Image (cartoon, rainbow over all chains, first blue to last red; front, side, top):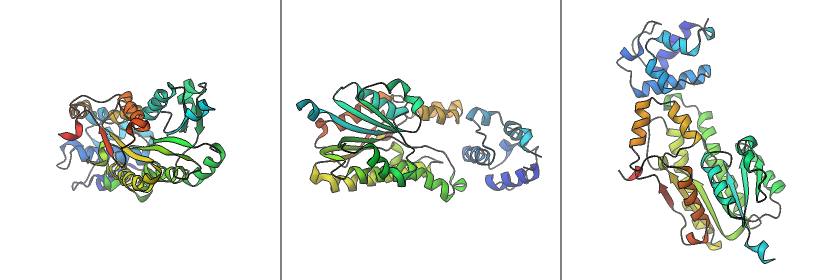
Length: 76
Length: 247
């Protein structure tokens, strides 16, 4: 998947108002809470077949850090 | 002849893991029980396959339309005295990520397979009078939790099945009940806890005043409901949750 497409999808799934970039820190978003984390886990699992654990969510900060967990090779 | 008559045929789904497997192990301790276990993965139960009173049927219950053929094939001349539906799946999906296919999938294994099995088991050729049928629901059948629309709805659906079928089968003195556990230490729970951070895991554990349960806690209740000692209990939902649901 193209990173741009990922950013667009993520913004839609997480229903955030701000335009996401790879540098956006997800936890700084007004919308970030346990439900947003659940949405992120669900979306990443559906789209990439990667299961983010609770510990992973604890470590995540920027969108790039999510990409790192999924694996850079899955993006073009 | 007398010995043959005292044998009890008991069907358990979800027999290869968690509560289903624990129940099979409990039931096999009584040589009078002949236990038929349905599951997908024979390897997970390999230690039990050599037991004389255990028969394993490898079958994927999502293939609902072939359950009747499986009964014809495997249970010719078998009349069941007990049935426990432990097969089920759990998932956490926020509603905006649901799709009709995903809803169907969880209902297929948790509810529709149970109804199809009960349809067949309700026939005289597959069940004894006085039989006992038990469906494994969950405290989530009555309570809610974020991200569990499919799971909660499917477990609640089983409670409706139990109440209706208890009335339908009362004439044959067949009892139909649900057992609703809180969090029990099973592979499914480990999987769930992996998705949560340590703080949330502790929070869930703290919600159970007597701590989280053991498989045997639930297996013992299931054995009781299968027994004659529960002969006047039908159409009920028995919660077993270490106090979780009374707070």
